[in-house]
Length: 391
Image (cartoon, rainbow, N blue to C red; front, top):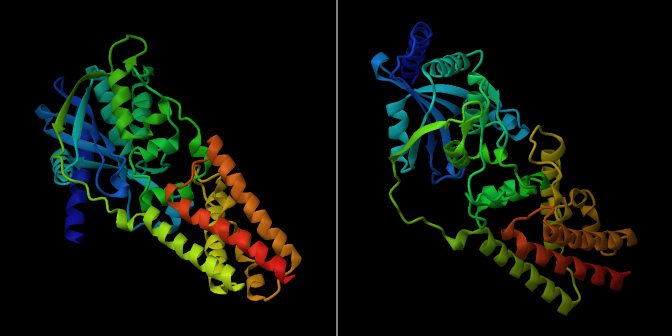
């Protein structure tokens, strides 16, 4: 591994030395490469990169802004805090292409309509940006990622205004819907996203903000033009590899909706037995308060203790209430304080507010949680009735 790393570093160093001395030829081409979605959650949104090809100078490389290092100290802590740096890497194009063909992911190239001078400007910008002292940037899923870098780098390197014209039949969508277009709503990945991200992603994204997704980099670049000359930004487009259609395995048996439906039936059944016997299953109540309290603390920390922009104003706190964790002691008692009964009524009101927020589109919540949320409301109503009889 160390030998391979050393060889890679030597190749990169050689490339830098070579690139800084070499002018691109008049035959050079610079393209935007768009990679289609992959099978895993992290690959669901596709990928974007620059390709610089100059056969006369024996250059064919990809400038890839989508690289991160798992060996980064405190990697997961930094990721959770929104402090993880991504970096620009240079890869041989052939290796890049073979990797994505091996993953059965569509590859499309859009050759940019640039003058020889503009190609040289962009190439020098990318080479300089890939230096160790310049290559790192603070990643943001919506505003600073491998796709947005394509648009931003072009604007900065060329210093020529580009008009990203709105495509025909374009209809603005919310950030959350754009995510759902790429991730099955009834999946654990989608559930995690819907719980962790707040109402700030339920606003309509502007036309340009859609370009946080590689798909829309491709769409908007196709319609873009230089403001001064009116010429198209893209000279021509070609499909390098079209993914083979294969059946996608979607197991409903392990989906959130079915799992939480099963858990909800257990909660409702235990509540019914409690009602018939005039008793209370303490283990069930402790579990619900512990689970919702822990999730609430997690949501609260994402909102206030991280640099993530998309985790703010998260109304999942209406059902995952952090205070549940700190008053859980009341559930051990045979007779609770009167304020605790009022607190249970408050939780029921919070569920009503959740429905209100969802109906008005203030925030969309995870579909897979619906059965669990309904069962929790029924349980809280029963607890109010039970404790009122005990007092």
